[in-house]
Image (tube, rainbow, N blue to C red):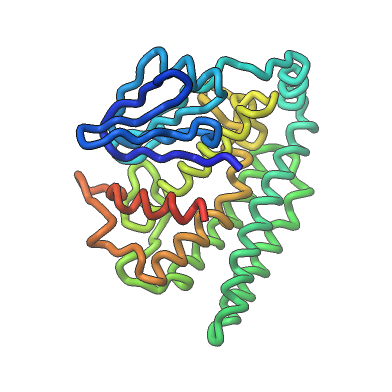
Length: 290
């Protein structure tokens, strides 16, 4: 299985004959081109035209992130999987209300289902407080019942929002660490440590899904739960909703509860908002790949 390469250092990515290497002032590291699926760049990295031509030929996506860990953009191979018919059918399913609603409901069902799985996991591992999880699960399940009765994306988003609000209310109970209170979801910018970790983790899921979509005939600009308007991508946001609870939330709970992420070593504060240091991003990425 091909792997993802993460680059945090500053340097240059270059091509030499039929291989790639990453060069810093201290060393040169060769990249196993046939075993690499995509490259995530967090440092200041220069690339050449020869390098871009080669990774395009090898169908490798390169994702760029800024200093704070926010996704900036992707260099991806020239659309090698072209299928006008698929794009037309994808657009048709967006424009026809019933078809779009059916797909959007599927994403919400998947998302809520994964939230419930996370809560059941912690319910089964707590000797005390099981009633708390039982009640939250029941409340979310009651919200999910309304999915089939929704007649618009707005109604569906409201159901998903209510379920997620109840799900978030369990975070302080699962973590129980005064250094990482949940308080409320804040994204741009994250206003506390826990939100900084969640935001970075979600960014990784969005980008991972985007990479996978590029390997299909689907167009990531046409989503169904998230509106297709002037947003760059929306289909990856739809699909990521299913994976965020089980991939990122579970991981965050584990890393904090085992004291692997601490407020002093892995979190920075700048102008009142919080973001992960390089070590924090590296830790989360390494565990995401486990």
